[in-house]
Length: 392
Image 1 (cartoon, rainbow, N blue to C red):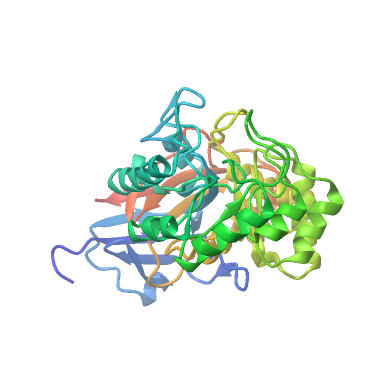
Image 2: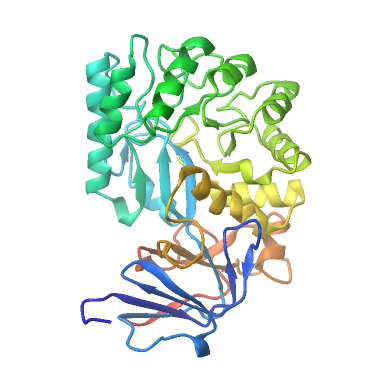
């Protein structure tokens, strides 16, 4: 190791959540990261922990992958004109979110709807979040909304410029399954992943997208299957889960009962790996800094699944579906972590049991790319125990 190598050691970990459904809890009490990537996981006595540039004592708390919000609507920097709010991304970091995925920068005032303008805006959005990460949070942005008149060359142009996402299909002028299917295929051909709006209108100007349109369009992810905000009828939700193998995205700003139905259907199909989580914020209901944690607690408690499995919906499931290098605790992945513990005076014999009873944990620290980004959360209930930096 050279003097320039950044070495993070986190020791005295009480429990490690992997983010992976096949093995949601890992053995070990220590993690080492070199230059922002996980290099070793295990027990401190077996690892090379000498000469760290940053040493963190976890103080017995749980370490999990940083949470991924699969559905946000950013505009520019850490500002949202939708709610006239500054520092909303930083607030979400304090809710454990270290990575966000744009479903379209649709709240930009005067959003261009001509093809030249929408491509320019998507490329600009991708660039400014690539160049500026609010509070270190990874924002995957530059997600153009489909408009009538787009041709295959437009998707090639977008891909050549670095665009990898489409905004929600259905938020633009393309609202028929036939047209959407053609454009989704073009996007997929050039490596651009697609998400489709599901349910009733979210804001004035949007419209109903029902199961027939969704199945015909065949987008990669069924965006907010529980509605954003208005959900489809139950039989359409179950039909969507049963009739395709695409991602099942459940969001905070949707119908909670419908979200539980979608999750239970995925389990009945023995396909829990399809479930991913988002907030669908900023939106008319505001920004929810604790939205992903609230979804984990809600799905675990009311859906009666282990909390460590619910964490996978917001980490490893999304990472695999989105082809990210974060969201799982394994060697070579980005060193993006949250250190969490039971909230003070919370019921339950441990943190996972407390979450399973519907309670939020307290976030004690966030780490992105091996760098400590925040200490005790200003938004979660205070954790019973807190990690601390020993030396830096």
